[in-house]
Length: 351
View 1 (tube, helix red, strand yellow):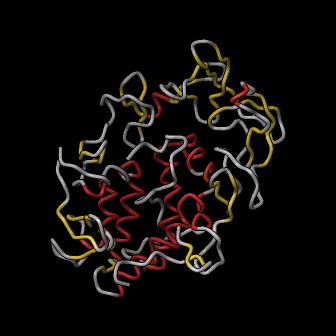
View 2 (view 1 turned 120 degrees about the vertical axis):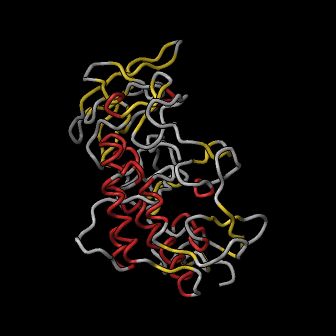
């Protein structure tokens, strides 16, 4: 899994968490559905810091748009279907353990880390090796659901270092899927080639994965680089300074107020809910004004995103629709499924 600081990354997060609301040793499925998505966003910020959280969560239209709506309308209904047909069971004690593990170690939520594995065990599969499956969860923690050309797939043992993969879940605990192969994740101190190519909680600078505290060090007026680091301290924006024959140079600048003059940068100099508008990078026009991000469906949008409750798809803001609401295309639906002009939950094989 790439680090969350890949600025144009798709919003596809799983196994994230944060603070449970009670101290009991178990949690119901309904409580887990409510707490898990909200806690996901808290964990990203706890591990990756304010700068990454602003880019990844706020830039996606807020926590619910980034993760909660998809979990509520796609993942959770799929688990419910599997539970109903007996291929998955929900473990209330493990659900609490998942949240506790992620609160204690939010940076282990990726790369099949300790907390990620704890959360993968919340929905325990009953299918044996070689058994039919539609979800990884139906196969249990030590297996995954392998699809070939059709659905259903078959449960197979998770793969070890050097074996092929197409998803992190295909690899055993502690490994990640990189360029189609299960490998040890690039931890702090490992070599790297791109800013977001390290495990969550670290960034690549100078060819080496380093803790965020060693990368987000640029002070106001100091230099920064969005591709290679260093980046600016939390609360500052890395904005375009000059563009010459050798490319663009960047500098750290303080945040500005709503409606103020701003300069194109990451994260935006503007307050949450606003973007630096009236800029045009293609024309080398980097000066703009802070203005609210688009808040109406159908409005044009860019990487700055849309207001909470909307998502930017194909440069147009679309209202995120819950299951059962009317739709004209799949991109409008939190579930990603529009069937018969209605948003629906994905159906498992054979359902």
